Image (cartoon, rainbow, N blue to C red):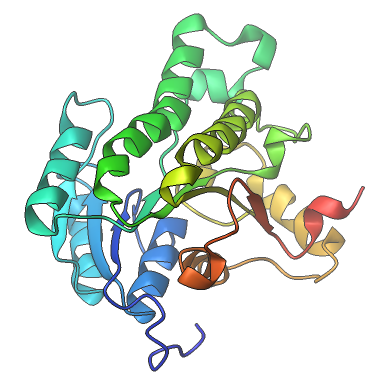
Length: 260
């Protein structure tokens, strides 16, 4: 990771990072970058089973808040923001790195997706970002930045990505509308689209290793992205120098998305 210990370009910023599962998570790359640039960090973990994997990472970045967040548990998201308000009184950066689709619906054809599976995927992967923005808005008193994670399969048909393609397309559209609505308050909103990464979430995609090989061989950079690459780019968008950049879907993929 780039040594930015002397830059402190996010000094005094308060950052919420959701979606860390382990030290391979994209959200972990973002948490490290926020911390490295001087921000105070709050971290969530899915449940008690996940906590032992996340807690040491939270300590590594000096997380001042560590709380459970399972979007299928009513009220947990609200509890996180209530804690932030009590502890910090404000929020500057908010990372939504949460997505889910039932296995049968994810691994099956889009045309075969169940109604319940589709609604569940949309609720957890897309609507939760809207809800998070709603809760963050009053805490971003001097502006701020909201980030969510998407993927190239939202725009192009990627084999085995299936129902997550339409869901991520909805998420990217949501990002633009949120950016337009919250922009007058100085709140920027971005969708971050990394190239394929070996994460826990990616393990649910069939033949993912082939997708990695294809990305590396076709990307202009001829290299795969790392969680640190993503983290530093996201941190940049959270800086005051990026205050006039909003509503973007930022590809961090070595240029893969421009190649046929």
